[in-house]
Image: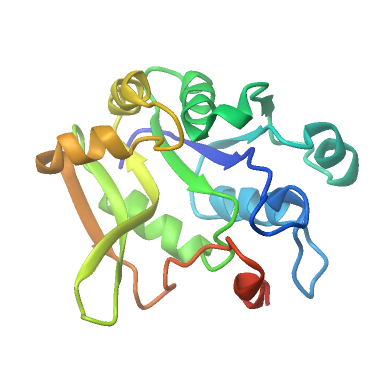
Length: 199
């Protein structure tokens, strides 16, 4: 991807199933909150700038985590699902920028994975990280890189908690999967049994 890449970190969820407050505040053994860690990963991986979308516990996150250098957007309607956060993040990009969307609850992604997606990105295409399941099949996951203009189209169709999923499902011909199984497993943190992913 030769155009500048705008990173969008979706970190608005309340983490209700986890029962530990906003996932953005979760931290591994290094003590760094996920929201800060993933924002840094996106920048180190090649994003020209990174916007952080908060929602649940936004004031708590902003007061507890140093997010200087990262524009913070607050989705006041976070309880209505991921779509609003996705739209807010996409709207913060410039028209000429590609948009890379990442989730705050995927601590396994690193700069190399982000850089791989950006290198693979093509004009007019959507490039998604793919991870192989136990059956060996490559499945679409996050992060997802949208060529300039495509994220805005996806945001227009986003509803509820589906984010970009409806658009991606409706336009499989636009989506390129990049196998990232050697770098991460694509897992996220949803329940207490997933906390081991924090490291």
